[in-house]
Image (cartoon, rainbow, N blue to C red; front, side, top):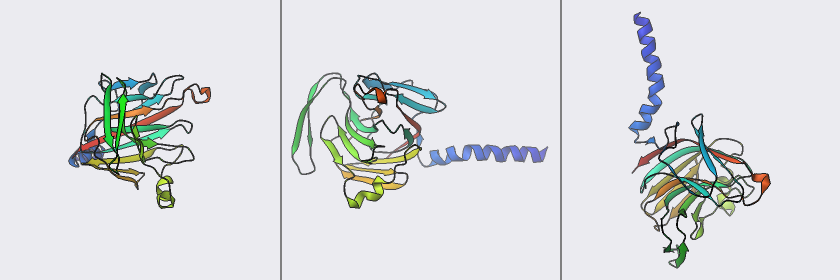
Length: 234
């Protein structure tokens, strides 16, 4: 009987140890693996559902970019997650992003000090996006300013060749995203990708994007999946 009790205790420790380790590091689940209740869908009509602990986003014809947003904003944090995307679909993870009920005139500065100005429509998610790019361009992990300035950190050039090779098609990929002050960094499967200094938006929503596909029937129903979303506020 004593041996059985010891064995049971060991099994319990093996089960809870990874979670305890994560909690001791300050990470908590952003998604509980069961429900997206409380998250808010913005933008288009792409669909989101939970299957076997995974958030599944599915593209829909003739609808703009769609975003599944956290119910609250985050400023300084470290986020880890795993994702998998159909090769025909582009996607992204929004960080420090905004979505307002009324249209407004927005401004943001480029790294060279020049100012960008534009009008953001009501209900339009905008801000930093960490790219998911299974195309031959291979800019996964780069940083794009959605609905504002465009690319802030792309993966062009020979010096970013290793970063372009980090993303694996048809496989689960682990992303790590760290935001602290004006410093934004990304890693894909442990490989450093983006290292950006930009202070346009100090805090905002985290959101999961299904990119619009226009009328391309060949891309209808393509999917992107996310799991094991963990966040630590800094």
